[in-house]
Length: 437
Image (cartoon, rainbow, N blue to C red):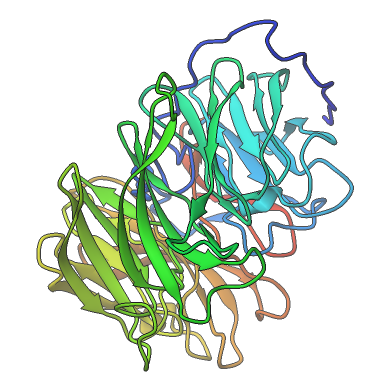
């Protein structure tokens, strides 16, 4: 059912601190660490289509969907409104954002709490909705396209943006806590922004950022991993703790495991020629960064690393069919899974999305899209047993990339019989849920 909610009056009431759900995939990439862990099982047999909302125009290159295991929240392109849609597990529309959020929404996926409350953002506003879609607060932002909100231990919602500053809001009432533009050392109108979601450690966030003049990246490809402390009671609520330089761009959001941040860069250092894509491991010692290791990649990295619940992290390079599991302490390769023979379809199929990891440490299963960008071939969602390195199942999205595909993530929702179903959006055609027949 479509429900357009009126704007609320800020400052009338303070609500409880927003707390993200702990399973399903409650925010971008799974949790504030960006682990990509779902904490629910995946379907164990070849799934069938449960439902498809073909009404929305799709999420484009956004990651599209999130879930708390009970309901689903998706963000979409399109100029007609309803850019955030919340569904029940059976596919029924529970409520929408109406005209509150615009077509920049799919650059971001919402925060979702256990009761079904949502915090979502676009390039103009950040809005907290109650479980029924009521607007608890609606605050204008300082600008920039939000690349998914994150939340600190103290309940502060932080937006890192493309084309704008970092900004922070109290999750209880939506009040702006502060904003911080990240300037270059020699300003000249240039600043750092991001095309990735930060990861969080307590009240410190980590942003993989690139130097820009607001329109295009610096020709020197200057990138920095920037640690920002968030303290709403301080005279400066947002302060830079440290910076670690690298050669941009960075194609994936940073992952945090313990005190170490894992992220990619296109070069070892700014200005380097020729390019050499790397995955970096940088330890936060509290006052500064320490490079632990760097792992050379065969091409640009286009998705954030995903934590394996057994230990280690998964990554892949654009156009390369190999999924690599690396040791978190040394960067040594622990596993190499070639996706193409597992898909076993005409064309060369490569990973093309986030890597969402379901199940447990005893039997982890990766959900990842497979496409054939350089050859004629179909597009799929695959489930891979990471212990046996075998295909659990595959589900066809379309006969070719020209028809449709997904670059998003794969949250899990439980149906009325508590059976797991996988949720995703595609570039062109709304939301899908697939589950055991």
